[in-house]
Length: 119
Image 1 (cartoon, rainbow, N blue to C red):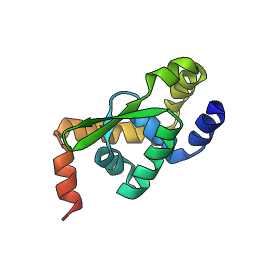
Image 2 (image 1 turned 90 degrees about the horizontal axis):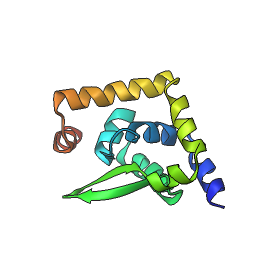
Image 3 (image 1 turned 45 degrees about the vertical axis):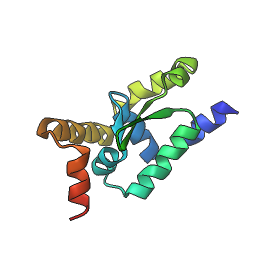
Image 4 (image 1 turned 60 degrees about the horizontal axis):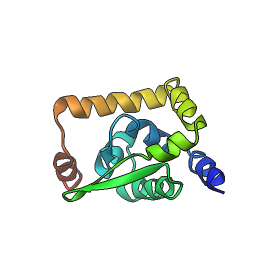
């Protein structure tokens, strides 16, 4: 029933936006949270559902966990790559990528985002 879990996980707009963000590079929770404008707990819940469906995987680096696509799952299920191509047509997902580019261009780090959240 792996296919059912994958489709359920993709049946939520926020989870699709997360997949769109991390398709280019792994991101940590605070970066995803900042871009999507959702709480840390909400972001974590969505990441857990994506991880349980084996769509993403996390890699711990120092105190942060960076989430990226699970390439094995995307290779196993070719339709997922086709879905990613369709994300390019969504205006909201394009705005998310623009926000990500702004963070990168400004050199904003996870530490900066944590400090901002605690103010």
